[in-house]
Length: 66
Image 1 (cartoon, rainbow, N blue to C red):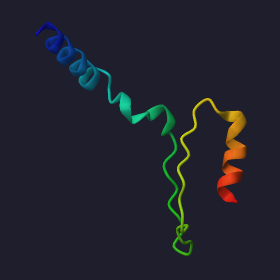
Image 2 (cartoon, one colour):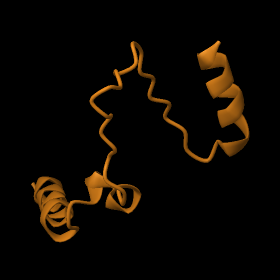
Image 3 (cartoon, one colour):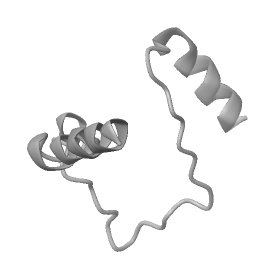
Image 4 (cartoon, helix red, strand yellow):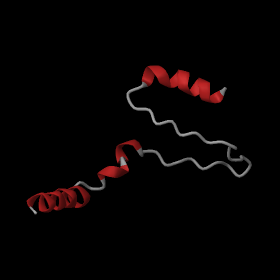
């Protein structure tokens, strides 16, 4: 019972007291640039999750482009 109550309190603090920590606002400073009317969206979009992998990002993107 105590563990369930503790988990509920912790999740409540995270959700209401942390100001939307899951939104990663420190990374969303610039508004997204919408394409001009004459531009078309690409046929394929790739999202590459990379964290602390700076040396390998260039190689990874190169292989995706090939």
